[in-house]
Length: 372
Ligand SMILES: Nc1nc2c(c(=O)[nH]1)N[C@H]1C(S)=C(S)[C@@H](COP(=O)(O)O)O[C@H]1N2
Ligand SMILES: [Mo]
Image (cartoon, rainbow, N blue to C red; front, top):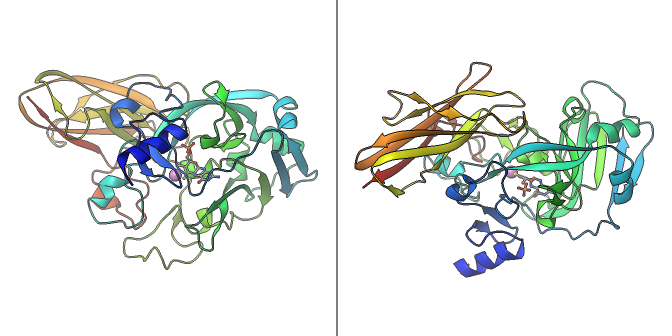
């Protein structure tokens, strides 16, 4: 596909024309790192878009949501029911695709058939809607440990085996946490179709794959979803596994995001002026934890300096950091690592994390540039 055709698909879905379009259909696009760096709350036209099928086209008045399974009073809700019968809540939350930073993994060893996401399969928005726990309570959910909540959507994924519509699940304990929303607004606008409008699930702190867009069915059930994207995909397989031959339930299912950080400015290969250089990026800790420190190294991790860390907009949003350093003319190697309130820091190399589907890269962030 030509660059202009890809730019046309970005425009069609309300995205900036400098988005890096990985696939046209299904539409998969990430913003350039320097653009992502510009704002704490990512504008809708800049927010990454990750899809496994064509977008359903559901008018709010036609949309229905069923809530069933291990509940005493199954529900069949209209858009009006959802938006008027429950209290509204907003959460600033970062969504990150489990495949963000995959490009660094496939420079270790190839990962055929998977999009080579660089720095941009992560974005932050203010989401507004109702708490999933309020809807589950209205349905008389049985509060038993070990239950799971499955979300299903109508978009059909040709890549799934067998071909099926998108779905996934989260444990009931997480589903009952106040940060999990059924959202119909993103940054104060009606949720755009590309991001799951009219209504999507937002599961802050978990990989993006669990935030099911265009959700139409919620089922409380004794086991995780059998959907391809829960039972087969979005799992960390051992390096020697054949990703095309794994059975259901093999590998480690991804749920909460790992501690991670990245460098957005300067960008890979950029030529900057010698002298004062402000390095910028983000950091996030796992499932509701906080980032306590970010270190930056200009010598591959021999020595470190602490970056200035700004308070996160919420417990569920990335923390932004920056550090102004003095650089001499010549090649530049910039590395960053974050520390969480639990005292853990990130693994050093993508090589130690390589896995056949290229998920969960949270190695030290690293870019090279040059000063002139
Ligand atoms: N119905 C549906 N929901 C979905 C997906 C999808 O393909 N279909 N992709 C998931 C993945 S892998 C991610 S990372 C996020 C991306 O959300 P965004 O496109 O709003 O950025 O949506 C998730 N929800
Ligand atoms: Mo994702």
